[in-house]
Length: 424
Ligand SMILES: [Zn+2]
Image 1: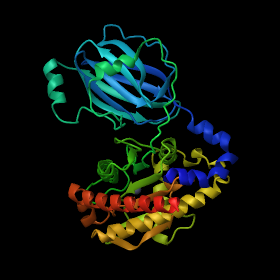
Image 2: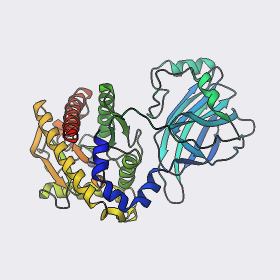
Image 3: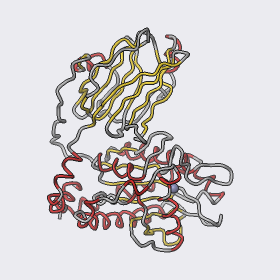
């Protein structure tokens, strides 16, 4: 198994800074507070304050009507929740749903539907938050809202169970407020885990990324392509996949890396479609980390990218240089070798699938987002939206599917080769 192989190699480095790593990884998500905001028109905003951003899944159910939120297993430190008087909320329960997954159930006196749900990373004095907006509707309104495929399901936390719902039986394991279940650690799985791939859709929220001459925003291309890639990887049955962002939300560069580490990623893939001066430049390219950019064009791109946090009014220096970097130098070199290997594999597969590539498509640059020392990381520039032809192509699902297919092939080749070398 690839992870075991890497862990073995990195053992020395891990021991050297065991304290920091263990404290970072063994910590479960903590829910610190729950707030309800009531708005005119029977709209409700639910805010869960957490100690970290996390993937989630939110949906409403009927018989009886309720709002359900699944999160990675959490420590409930929100205590007793006062029920807003005269509101649709009649009770709140929470507990472990299945090893590794916790559930919050909010019982509702009337049908409701979710209008939006998203994670807000910490900012100023505010902690990381999960926000769920929902509104009271009629029984018919509920049914029509839920008749439209997946639109009522928010977030992409995967809860590995064969079928949804049957939730009433399962919720029997969910304790009633105010008694929190004692913290339970996820059971160690005997079967080897599938590799975890974290896909990072570039930009988002206040940071649109590059904008094409006809107004196409990079942040929308990256999320569409990332979701397509996630679906294709999941469909292969060979991987676990997480997205750093599911929605149009701003994430700091450091948070994207932290997300990959929290999920113990075997691979981190950041997706972009930037712009370059000169509208004739086109073609996909793959970047791996280097302090020294492979050419001037690439250096400019990295500066542009690393500025994302400044654009959003955040101070990049506040992210701090990772003090364990020196100790993890060994692991850094190892994951850089693996990243390079993957980049070359991807270049092969993409050109083999008839995708247009830049000259010297594997390039090196100091992208901040590639700086996880212990995770092989690459950045895919799917194309440049400063080129009208490419902006148009990237806006089309069929072209994104073509890119995704080639990337899946590259990732397949990478893992099968990695597995082979680790068995030797
Ligand atoms: Zn970008």
